[in-house]
Image 1: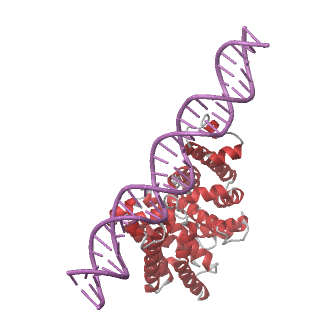
Image 2: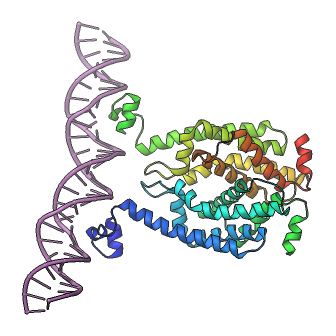
Image 3: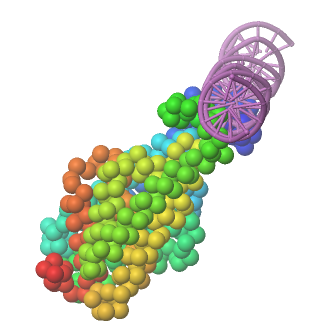
Length: 174
Length: 174
DNA sequence: TCGAATACTGACTATACGGTCATTTTATAA
DNA sequence: TTATAAAATGACCGTATAGTCAGTATTCGA
């Protein structure tokens, strides 16, 4: 709290005129960033018309955001100090984009565009893969471009979803 | 430290005859469990002859272990209190099994059994998916059997690896 | 200009907790 | 049995830090 006060340029006591506790500040900051992240992910998903595009958009926007807000992602992932209220919080915020993806998968599945699969499970799996790549980036085990990684991931997933062996090629052309 | 001493049934000072610091205890416990987990994963991978079997074994053994050692997985995932030396540690220990999987993928790729893909990346992706499923289990968002989840995951991955649309069927019969 | 209300301050308090060490208990050997 | 060593003890210390509040500064309406 001393550090925060110093950084903001006010006295410590003043902080408590605006926040009840340190925990509340912590939560407010994470909520703020998470809201932005969730919204931008939803927007980018909705902007795409094809399922493959939506999947690519999902992975790409998350990779890009992670690049821009490394510290935030690090905290979402490891928690900070004595505040590990993170994982369930993380899932809470991730839910909306993932469910959006899931319903797109469900639609494509109904249309016969992809094979029948439990769409929500698949959507979560996509989120898992993306998160893993982000983590390895944060650990410096990956020096490729976000777009490259997003391309690889979405192609990989698409292959698993596609009905035939050439479906991904058709989709590439669309 | 007071709690640990009480739990063990000795005085706090006695602990420091066997460990230099609290951090050292923390590390010792995690290392112990991680070593077991790593070894059992390697064994189960090696026990399988086919790539698909190895992949299934990898996911299944991790899901089973997570079931048996929930608290350990929770700590590996969130860190505990002020010791978030976890994520990089986690990757450190995961490396061996993942690389084993990667080399199996590489072999199958060379043999033309699956399509050409960066085997290490794929192996890490498999680990990511598995971890995600484990986490959702820990959060109580999943009530299916570990074997069921492992089956689903390995089938999903296999589809993404397979060359043709029917490859997974062939493999199912083997 | 002045008094009241509002906003701000930072020294201080309370507490939690990792680590220490003088003292006591137990084991060992002659 | 007893002297010495080894092991164990737990009251105590130092430090870090979230939160408080009596006092001070600023704003604002009359």
